[in-house]
Length: 304
Image (cartoon, rainbow, N blue to C red; front, side):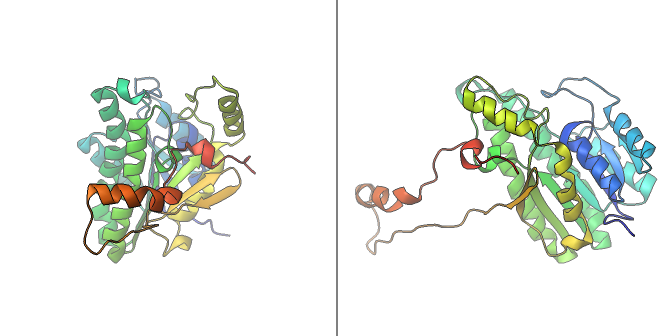
């Protein structure tokens, strides 16, 4: 019986540990040849384990799969070309790109400095662009391909102290949708996943209150291996026609998120002034305004 990704090659960034590693190993188990990309840094981006990518690639090979390591940075354009060249040289092409690489530089907004903001966007958003763009010509030439980008409910809904991360993760949604629209004509698909899983990317969540402690306890029950099947499906031919969407995997649950559309309008034939808006808009729009909620406030039920 053939596997759903048999004969396909995937590039997975940030695959040295956590969600990225689980995705890389899961794709390999589903038949994909995998380029395991990771520069081996800490959660905040400092050098840590330069051999992380090779460790994962070796584990995949030991399990009977095909994998090769890449320790290039997704933030550098020339380095990204080498990531793609690794896939071409070892496996003859690319069929799936999984943009998972990321770092955190959390700070409350009035204390966040420009370097903290820029560093997070460079890895998450610019890194996703760089790898996606580097593969786009190959996808266009062969008239097929799939992108899966990791977003977050921190960006889709909200969280404290993460203006840089929220901006990057919501920016990735826009990038994914743009790719989906621009490349639909050549049968290339692009989707996002907001993963729920205990990993080092969420291990920095503060646990000062009982509510936060409960939230972390729930996250610890959700293993990163639960994310891989959705990535494999979206990267397979079985997902033909599914593009420009936002999904989430939360333990044994799969969600489809909505996307911004008008929810209410008001009209005044003679036009508006600030005063007439003050008289009309608050009462008309108040029931439809989106509350300043965190992800945990909106998705508050226990994982199943």
